[in-house]
Length: 201
Image (cartoon, one colour):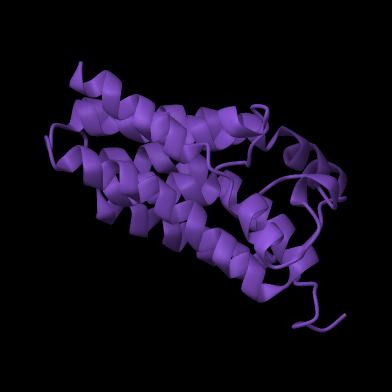
């Protein structure tokens, strides 16, 4: 019963769209109507600028951490934490409050990993940053980090619940990035850039 309640809370928390809220508060276009139509930090960055993108990134990560902190008040059992983490990420990608059309899950995945095992989270973040800054492609960084996640998890914390969670996250991220994979293969993927009034045009 406890795990079910915590998973529902995590899913509902994950269903809160940081991108939509940030854009409304800052008077920006709904991210679901511009650019890639993805309510995520990269799309907000491109069309709303660095500040809006940073707020969205931080919010998406935090909403992944909070359900795990709540779960840890009751238990540090990896199975429970993995279930709660998966529910929060699923809520971000398929939010009940926004017609089940959510973001691609990179920042929220980092948040839930941080709540489960900070070493895994930081190792995967290092991979993401290396690719993102090296190639200026957010989607490529996310795909590479997702593919490396199971290996990183096995190396740093080989417990079965976390290995299963890492596989779940990898599959979800690859599915959500299917259009980006196609664009990367055809050379049409947009590079990281910031729009809005606080960045060069």
